[in-house]
Length: 103
Image 1 (tube, one colour):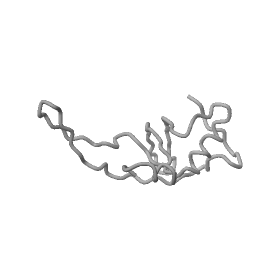
Image 2 (cartoon, helix red, strand yellow):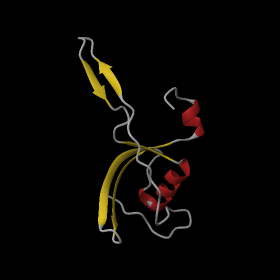
Image 3 (cartoon, one colour):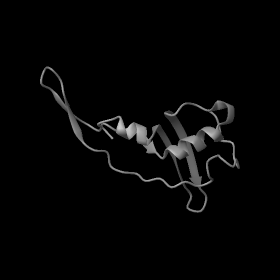
Image 4 (cartoon, one colour):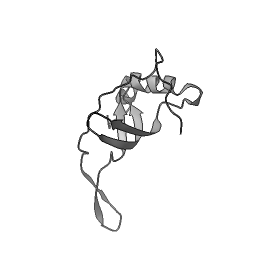
């Protein structure tokens, strides 16, 4: 686990905004005829490509590729709440959107 380096000009800011949205629903069928309800995007995060670059800058020598598996924890002393986020991060770039039927 690597902590972010704070106060870098090109690093991540102290606070970020996130939006939590409901996963689209889909189903999966097997060759034997069984069907399952699935959430195809379970456990993934789509992020601004600039934020991905800021994350890598804040990791210093531990930077990783474009797609990441991030584990984040946070605490808000004002409200006494906190949380943990473990997710696969995928930056939404124009190139990725143009090259995929999904996006």
